[in-house]
Length: 480
Image (cartoon, rainbow, N blue to C red; front, side):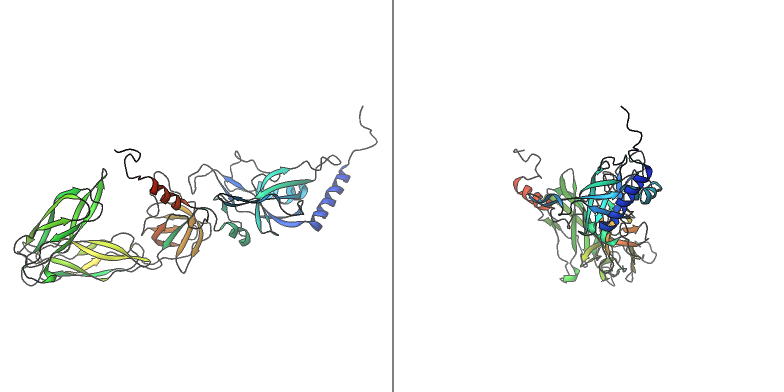
């Protein structure tokens, strides 16, 4: 039997009245929350994933808190991984208010959102965020009920949002509202870059063998590089016949590992010595290795550079700088000396620690001029912005800024794009460039460990594992 035609079962004017009453009720008894839509961006930006999501818009809207007696859900649960907070919140929004004041802005966005992944919304979506100001908490929408109450007068008037406390997973949150953005400023996997504010060029001088040819070491030949070294061996050189300590030649060795065999790669002199009439003997001791042997040759037909003296170690060297030495006066025996720089750490900066004598040269009558290359960046500039992308000038690694301290030059970053074809981290000395701010500072050191997550115990697990198994063995479970 058909419905009674004398009763309209809800007219447009009646439906309008109900919607107006609901809107008025929400404005009287509701709470102003911030609705933050999730954007699914199908671009390879920071961490080389097919999809990334970001939250960079905000809309204020009145909402009625259904769970007026407090948060719902399981509450605070103590687990073996720590305390898990599982609070839930149910709020009611006006359907008309959302569709008139939020949906049109979301539909008009042209920000790279892939509509094939998530169509343009006309209602609240699962996955969006709601900031609840009374508890100063971010909640994630888990389910949207749009049929409760069920078609009163033939229409639905509200949305019920069932929300759970938001668990951050390296999403980009940049709503420009400080109280919201700081909610996740120290959340997620964060690594630290110690940057260099101001660099300084190092200076050094050279000392030649004396006014007359005095027998300095021309080179040290590595006859056998040995094997099995676990630490750098001691290079011993027999004393100079002059009996002067400053005339004794000294050298250091450098190790290399190839095919699981660690051997001596090269030997460089720190002092070429003076007064030798015959080649001195070379001994290689310590370091756990065997079989290494070396011999030396001397130069008695001209003066050469026997050692370098560091006057100023400079500041801000990420890699060893190039050392340039002026040549001797042109003659039949003239040969330019060659020096190799080595850097070290002094406090919070990398400095020029020493210059080794690779080749003393020959034919000098006066001490040559030593020129040391500038550090990668003599002075940093600018201030990094929160959430902007930064990129290493050499490694090409990209990351997002979490926080930058202008005084200490500590840059906290997240979403570091380290892939199989990229280096393991930022190179010391390379410049980190802000893609929005244009800020540029060189890297002093890069700490990959997440030191801001109180539940991270990777180092503890690794230490305990090393106590159980020796992972340096080919087969830690057998005898081979």
